[in-house]
Length: 348
Ligand code: UDP
Ligand code: MG
Image (cartoon, rainbow, N blue to C red; front, side, top):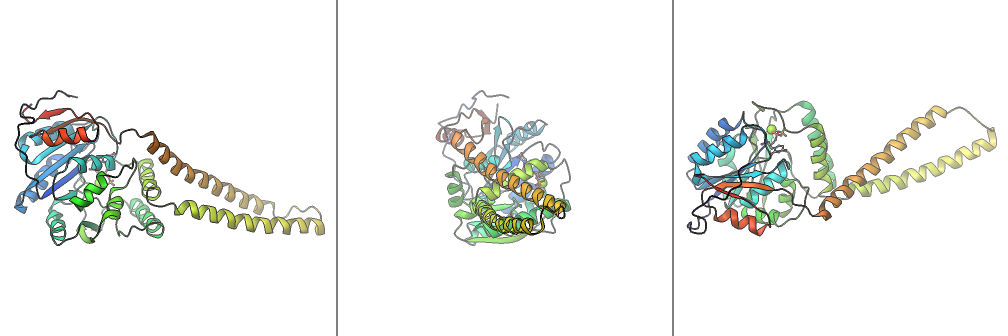
């Protein structure tokens, strides 16, 4: 990967005025979607008739995504910034980087696979202009596998019951955030997070609108079952300790019931002598309790593991290069956040 600084105008470029809208797009092996995305996204933004920028974060793609992003940056240098990660750090880390490099008054996040139609951006902007600092979305007729929809529903219920976050459809990434909310997210040091939930915590006037949803037309979902489970644990562990408290209460309840049960069995033993009836029931109950105990240990592990990652304090992501036309902003941000961001001008 090229890391040679090559911006001759660095430091002399006039300060660019802040665009009204920044669109942040995480990209991971999306070569099949990018050409259509560029056409539809820039088309929709050009029709808006306002100033905008697109910030693409390549999350360690191994296909032609980087080449396509580079070409797009050269085709539309004034409106395009591309941040290249050194390797895959995950969608939410990519969005965090996008937030750091976005300069707009309103920041819209969008998936690269076109499941979120870019044509909905004007409606998000309308709600933002009406004074909402957080514009959430609900997918109308979500076009995903039934198992994904079922899992989302279950996690939605858990999240709703255990956290302060009141969002109807947490999984939809097509959202708009005010600059103040984005700055608050940028100031949050969490290693593992779930952006729509974190941003919601900082919103003063949140709103929700319905948006269209499309099936993924090219490529495959970048979420394996393992990644999906991890992400949902990020959502719960990052925002509440209620599951741990529920577990301690459950433990207390079960201990109390078990205590009564032991006394009952002891009395039966004294009255009837040794008995074999009920052995299988006891095994059933025992396996269930062992399972529950293992789940509890695992749950604690999910929290402890995240605390461990947090205290190690390693960077949430590493940037290999930033491609943009001015240079000044990206270099300044890289310096502020203590990371080395090699810089490439758009004409390199
Ligand atoms: N993505 C990413 N890093 C990852 C996984 C996903 O940047 O490790 C991006 C991906 O390229 C897409 C968005 O995040 O732009 C959503 O991913 P995907 O469509 O695979 O998720 P799904 O719609 O299946 O939830
Ligand atoms: Mg998708």
